[in-house]
Length: 123
Image (tube, rainbow, N blue to C red):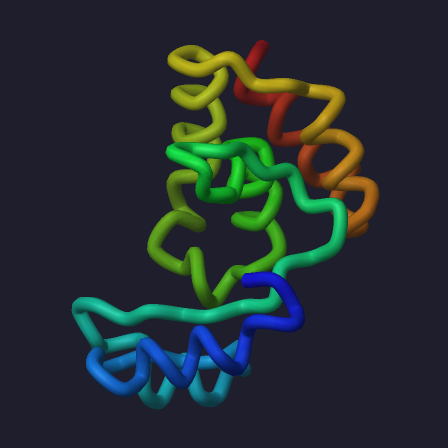
C-alpha cells in the first residue's frame, strides 16, 4: 500500500475483517499470524516497486513477488522450501521482465540471491 494510505487502509479493513496486521515484525508474525488460516498483511509499498494495472488498480507484478519472497521470509514462509520450483514455473509459464526484476532486486539488495536462484532454475 502507498505510504500515505497505509494507516487508512489498515483502519478501514480492520473495521470489518478479523486478522488484519500492519507491517508485523517477526515476533508478531510468529505469535499471531503463523497459525491463522487467513490473514491480511498491510505493508508499505517500496518506492519504484514493479507494479501492473488490472482494471485500473495497481497490483504487485510477478517480478516484485519473486524478489519479495527472498526478503520477506516470514510472509512467504510456506514458500521458502519451494523457491526453485516457484521460480522455474514462473519463468516457464509467464513472461518475466528480467531487467525489471533485476532492477528491483538491486534496489532491495537481493541481486546475488535472485541471480543465483534464476541461474539454478533456468539451467
